[in-house]
Image 1 (spheres, rainbow, N blue to C red):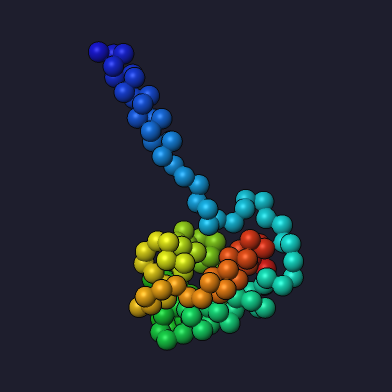
Image 2 (cartoon, rainbow, N blue to C red; image 1 turned 90 degrees about the vertical axis):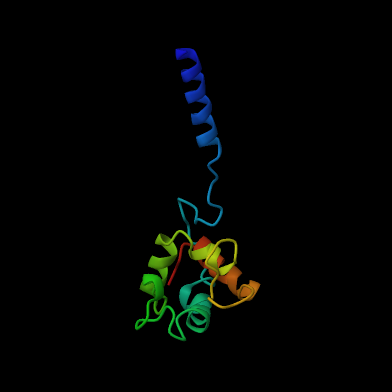
Length: 123
């Protein structure tokens, strides 16, 4: 009986740890800024202003779900701490953002936001 319990416990541990997958949207642990083009000011601010921080969603007044995307400080904090920040904009998880859209924002805008992440979130 003890051997059965031990084998079952080992099998469950293997299943549990084997089922974990790495979040492919996360920034690299050791980040090195690679360029000066993919910055918040140059490529991300206009996208977030137009798609997210307007219309009573993620601006200073509303801050829907506690997420503010109205300036660099709030945007980088949300991007770094909100586990769903990137997957909600490319519709790979729910809820989908922008809310009410039937498809994601333009691929070039999603890619610009992800390049900002991959470039270590420079201002």
